[in-house]
Length: 172
Image (cartoon, rainbow, N blue to C red; front, side):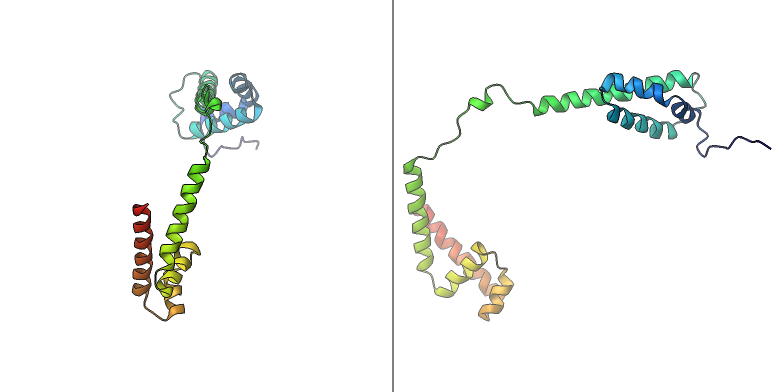
């Protein structure tokens, strides 16, 4: 007996898509101008067709062509919108970058020096805890173990040092 194998999907539209794949790829390629993207559109159409009921479709070939064309058109429009979003603004390249003046550098340097001096005026343990945590990134629990104190005390030391820096900045 020579029986035709049954398809697990039993979907006329899927069968039509597979049968007319070369023609459908040309339709998508005509819109997208890319064979790779046309293949993606074809795959999307097959996936979409698998979820549809094809029994009410009168002309599966025409439906498949329109389906692929519409998917390709949607993709082309999406790419066009994305391209517009990424395009440079007119004149944006002529906007000067913010320049740092010598005076700005001097003020920043003096402020940093004042903050560092305020840290030096703190108790050594507080200074060290602040630098280790905020500058070196050491967790407070590790600092507490190194110093032999509670995590809460380390937290208060870091906060005290931070407040000292803040007072210096506010006074500047």
